[in-house]
Length: 129
Image 1 (cartoon, rainbow, N blue to C red):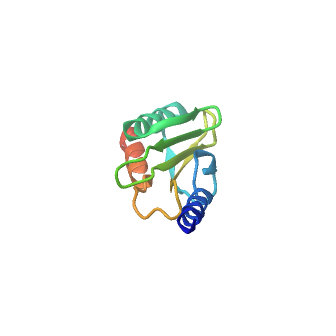
Image 2 (image 1 turned 90 degrees about the horizontal axis):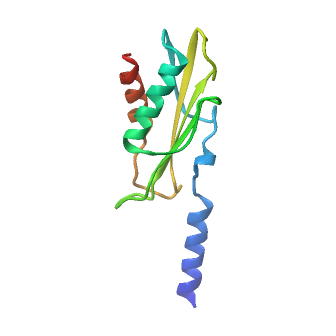
Image 3 (image 1 turned 120 degrees about the vertical axis):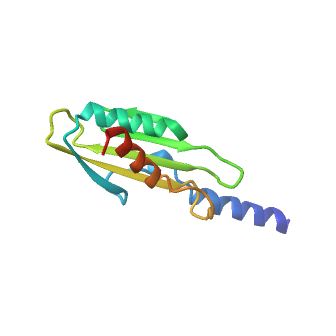
């Protein structure tokens, strides 16, 4: 009985601290960089290409400037979720702000990858920056 109670408590603790792609919201602590001299379409293409190399894209909304992706569970990780937000989400702006967020699925997860530097360097490379 004690073992079952302990397992239930641990399962509840792990579930309570889980991040999902919906946890990713613009302006909530991601890393940002500015892009000038590139079109919105070029930036969006770079975002999608970079994310699709290592992640599974679960939301691709160029109209809103939102891309959400995930990395599935692996041998040493419970997975991660990644969001990329491009502002303003319209063509013809003088410049754009790209924000990248990466969260581990569980707050008690010790292993896992922060995808922020991979995404930022990949997007910049695709744009020739």
